[in-house]
Length: 105
Image 1: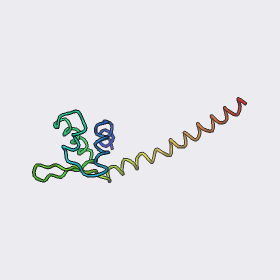
Image 2: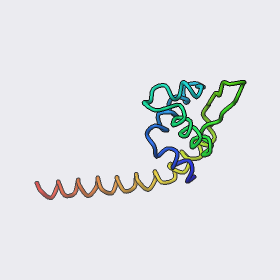
Image 3: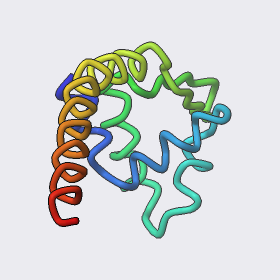
Image 4: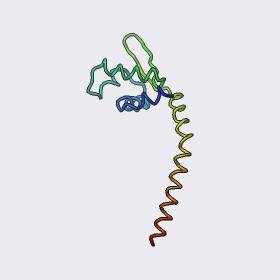
């Protein structure tokens, strides 16, 4: 899980994940929107690959990347567990704010 959230901590990598969520992309296509060298983009892609979020296939000189939905689902499952806590805390805050507002009037 640490590798997944480390990979998603960087805005460039998050954008790359968004890009491959819609369809497979080549390394060049993933690098294109960013003001960085292909080597720098490749380092980001390797982080995503090590996390398991991205899978790469190689055919000749073409490297194609696609999203690994199973890994993304594991991260979402982890977040959903804590969503219950956040929801309870926000509900409690809402009750307290409502009570405070009622006491003002």
